[in-house]
Image 1 (cartoon, rainbow, N blue to C red):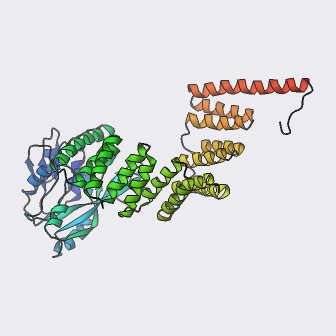
Image 2: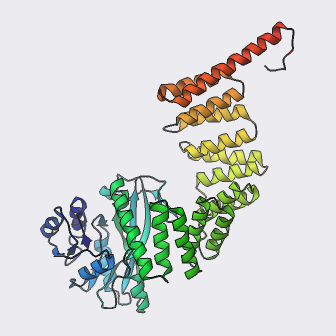
Image 3: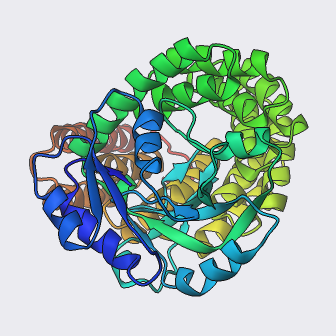
Length: 453
């Protein structure tokens, strides 16, 4: 391990390896809290090393202190799954593997989170420490490997021994146990500090390894996902694509960046390349569909969403997008049926209600759209003030002034000081009064009105 100011989590981490490992080496890079005391009290051998803005250098210094034949790598905000105690002995007794890819389960506070293009899954972990988190995403990294002079960490940041194992002609296996990682659910300040560090180190890594596509990709991901610098991220992804044209994930994120910049045709081109190079995922097809939809190419959107849904048939979001695109492509009833089916699966999901409202309004079925608008107010946990305004506006368009007024009054009970709601109520009163006045004048003058007024 390498650690710094990890007192809050280190104890649980070291407790999780008790009885599994023969020795614990903790390399401290400058802690000012109780990290080293906790490590020593847990039986670890603690060494102090200088921090030189290079994760590989730090890890290799700690690796040099290891005396055991096999090495398990953990970070302080991780814990080893209890099943590892049974799994590891058989893995290290295998004679043909020099290292193992280990599944790392990263916990999140929302199902909307993801890692790269991998969406979060509903947390089903039985680990007590993990039960507070509703979602997780898994990725793999080489965390168990032989102590061998040919195997060492490479890369200033996002460091790994995997490339050294492969370049040395050694076999890499897949482990049958988990590592649980809680660091991605850290507070905003901690994440911001890490993101800034990773960007700085990522730029140094690219400067040191300018022909390494993975280095460009990693820097791009930090710029895009963590810092929101879309233009800078796109340059990194395009460089990765040029350096390694078969790197599907680089094409995928180049497509994502183009999409966020509003370059929808370019996004479709990059994402199609991603599919050709192995990235045939629901996310790839979904964003292709989004790009077609934003271009007004509804038939293309339908085809892409249908492909995405075939890969993720349980996705209510994809089904609702498929439905809306179908409505816009001239298949109104089939599209509405899909959107309503999606709502039945996830009635609390706000964006599904928005698509139903949009579809009905586009079809000029305004009263139905107004009913759908009120349905969203009842179904979602925290409707916004804008949701009340929209539902009231739809009722007003349908000529139901009383219902529109009632919706705005309910909204003002929740958002008492919201100026948009107050303004909408004032405008509604003026419009309703004007309509009533015109009708009275027509009646007094013997005029006629259309049926249904």
